[in-house]
Length: 414
Image (cartoon, rainbow, N blue to C red; front, side):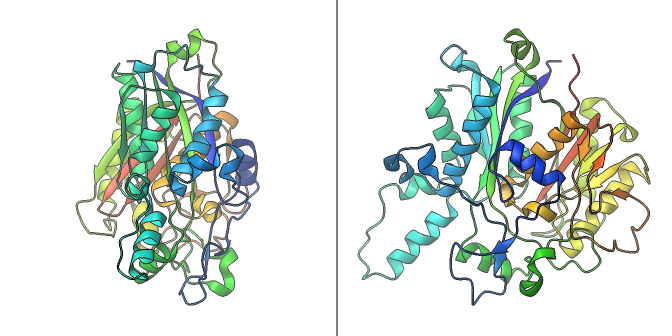
């Protein structure tokens, strides 16, 4: 079996715009929440979010090119630029036919679609659409633009599985290398949906927290008083490489990807299965592919959005598969970053991989009192980071439609 390793990472997030800053802020429990600044949210039930801060696309791209892309693509390009630089790859030398891009996003050019339709509706009926309107909104366009920028001619497409999109992309990219189809894959996910339609739509679903007077603690995964998630935005990127290929060029290896599991709850349009059926299957498949048993997993970065039913079903699934394992530490990093929707799996996958590299598990902030049903059953990193050996770590993501994706990372060893 061909081994798949991570040789490059990049991030743009509510708590840091480079991997070093992002990781330090994760370990220190920095909260990315704040009042919504991207539009006037004064009439919305939710008036806060985890927005990207101090992002200037002109810092790495020409103004003419910036106008061609929606924010979700700009976010992707920014994170990928970091990952490629960290990997040290020279695509002038690498075989571009054996290098590809698989990118995840749940909504694609959501902001562009909203703005263009509103502009038309508020006009005199004359169709004056931006010539880049269609390519800006396509979910696959980020993958296409990344491949064009680096001249990569291998597999190139987008994955859309709602909030599991980026993890699905990561697993697919891992499989491309494992199966011998590629030597190098760029993967990850990006999302930019903090807009009137995004906040209003999730408010209508009653999925968002409405703690406007207490926004700092609104994202409180597993807490008995949780009332919904906090929306986030951003991107994270990985350069995956076949191990021998990376070794031959002397690349620094961050962690290894050893398993991926995808499944379906087959239960409800937006809700997770109350007994965690799909999650048990997905997590189990990831472990099975890696050839390990549940007791060997040291850490789970949970999907844990801070919704009442979702968090409960995930803990039920974890208990069903792992039992009451005192050697397993669970964290819920959406408490800091918010929920990045289709990009969540990339950002949380990055955190999980770094946990393996640095033997550190970020805290779960804001959570004060675990539901009585689960209190004492699990070791959850509440309030402060946990420094411990992390050989295997699992990242979970679940999406509307019942989509389940779990990816397993391992501390790299020669």
